[in-house]
Image 1 (cartoon, rainbow, N blue to C red):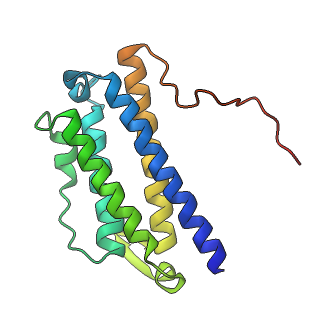
Image 2 (cartoon, rainbow, N blue to C red):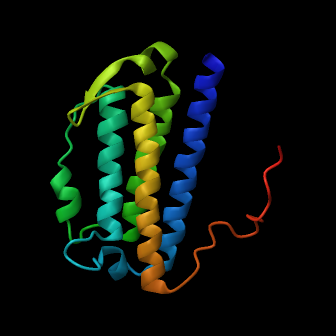
Length: 169
C-alpha cells in the first residue's frame, strides 16, 4: 500500500506542477488588463480564478491537512477587481503550490486515511489531495479558455507531442 500512496502523491505533484506551467503560459500571453478582465458579470477573470485556486488549496491542504488556521475569505477571491500584477499573482500561486506539494509529501498512510472537515465536507487526506488536484485542473482549463478567447492563440500545451498514438496493450 505504501507504494500506491507514493505513486498517487507523485502523480498528483506532477499534475500540480503541470497546471502551474500551463497557467504561466497563459499569463505570458495576456496583458495586465486582460488578466483582470471578466467576460461578463456571471464569470470570473483569470486573476479571480488564480486567487480562488490559492484560497482553495490553502484551505484544503495547508489548513485541513497541515493544521494551519483556516483564514480563507472565499468571497474576496471573486470580488477582487485589481490589486496584483500578473507577476504577483503567479508568485502567489507558485508559492501556494510549492507549500501544498511540501505538505502532501510528509503525510503517511495513516494520516491520509483520517477524516477531516473541510469547507463543511467530510474528507480523508486522499480525497483532499484528489479534490485539490482536480479542482486545479478544472480552473486551469477555464484560464486556458479565457486566454484563447482573448488572444486567439493556440497555447501549445502539447507542442511536440504526438497525441494520435494508440495505446499499447
